[in-house]
Length: 610
Image (cartoon, rainbow, N blue to C red):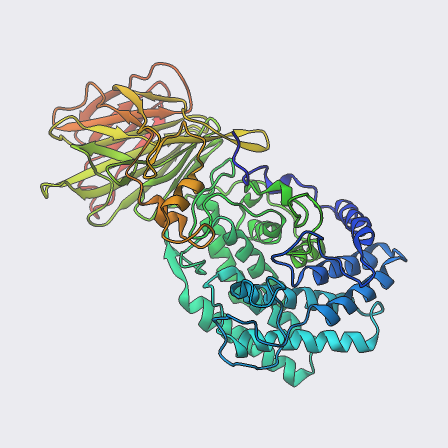
């Protein structure tokens, strides 16, 4: 079984001028064959996300004419523009709309569904998309569209802007990507209006970004991010927001868009594994975008010096939006226009600067959450998610059913590199159910091929074990395959447990249910509107690797040692020294410093090849 949306690296798609011209030739032939007598370029089966799509294909044809000079295109562009102006401009309020601030404004908007009163909740983003398709066409229309329809299109775009910013509440879905897209539309529109009017629109767009988006950013893993459907980041919409920030900077030159894009890009780089896998979000857990992410990932990857193109996008949308049958759809056409016009190239080398919420070397990586607990582990092309025991999610020691991973105080981190080894020591104060403070010190070491994790904690009563992850998925060429086991070795006993199937609040890695499906089943609202991150937190138990204490540990400590990524025996030697605890494995010797740390309380660690 393969995951449906996460597929190949986005930077594997050719992005040279010849490749893009080939894409436009393909778009041209399909569009001309589809063009109806009344001028529609909509996908014939589309019923949702439809109000802007014909205009989007029209903008692609205009770009194709600019690049190829195809003599068939001017007439097609004019016919299809006339269709949109005549058939797809709505000025009467959509019955049931809940986000209007002014009734009967008479301003134009685009509908998510054409039928009166059907799904008006989607009209706001559809109008943002229609504005962006319109301004793209205005940019390309000179010499192609006559003065009268160009003026009508410019007035329509201005009307869309006013509907979005005057007649409705701004960003009614609390979706950062839509809101930043609206700002981009205003910035692009301003260039086509008389100077005073254009400056007014530009100023309004910048204020909306400052007050309506930037002031409401959400903090996660040390970064301030544009909110997405009530959360900090969504692995489908986050890269789309990054593309909107890239375009906002391209058209305005305002440093704030570059600065905020850098923050989002570094955040994404930290949470994205070496193999490009990611999971989680307040709108979708596993659904990934395709070409819509290219502009942002490419430009900001180059800016921050990171290989963001490793992002595993949905290659079915590798070039442009498609319908279920794979045929062209104009939704998000503006993103294809922008990425073709953009001259940035992919940065393909990983960043080397240590990052607090990431450990990465070679094909191994660990992404850490806000509490510096692993949120995703990759080794040997396999990805493990945090396991769940008794409703507690994470990686860490478990005693009497209680997971010791939630910090009670400051979490301290030390990064170390030596002789081709990369390590991170995480020191957490935690409290047991009987209110005793413990110090959980976790050392993660990688040589780029395997990951060694050693966890030391003051001796615990009972029969403690280390919760060491839930195997979930593995790279399978340009696909992602579901798995139920991984290469894990333990210095102590090791078992892979499963909660069994049948209960919605228990996730068995052997089942055919995806993480996203399980998360939505437990979310408070329907699929696509519920928060899958919140739903996933309702899980009681999952499949899990459970590792017993390592033999030979000092009497006052419980030490757990596991290795991800390579098979075979694993028998590290543990020794108490005045500075702390040394671990000697088949590859390295390392020190986990005492809980007190150095003179400033910072954790101490060193590592060297054995």
